[in-house]
Image (tube, rainbow, N blue to C red; front, side, top):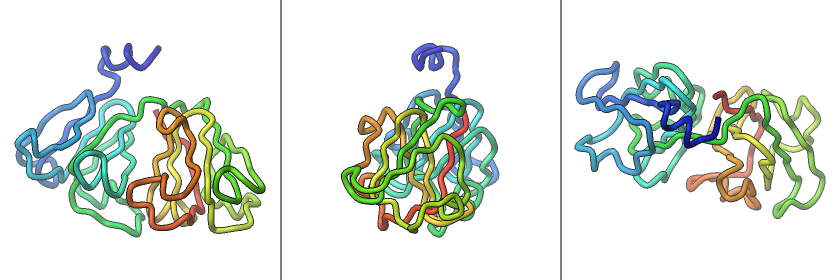
Length: 196
């Protein structure tokens, strides 16, 4: 099934509320929303993802810190920021992650910028890159060969989140500041496939 068929069948569906615990103004989306304020909301404080993985952003136009939103309930910001070292109490834009394919995901990490130096190819989740043999806390460049991944600043899927997709930037992230508009460091110590 291709992405267009999935959209037509409602494979991407999220409901957002303006207040915590699914209170206040609500709206359902099947497509991206670049700015929730254009829909008459001040902010998003709770979310229910019914179908498909999504990524939420702290600012309009898909800017700021990213937060992975997989199927489930997010009654407040702690639910989407999890063990993140960065907390934002609301989201202002979001979009579906259309290339997520848990069974067919492959990523290559590089020791240096521009895909230089030692490399390591992965197709599984790693709660600690150092435990699997990566000798550094840093990953200066990443190439997503297939699927979609979320990389984390610290082991155990904690810290800043970077959503890395094959269909964004052709899957090529030559420098850590391309991981996100708010990438402050090339420190990546855990990575996992995005669930669809």
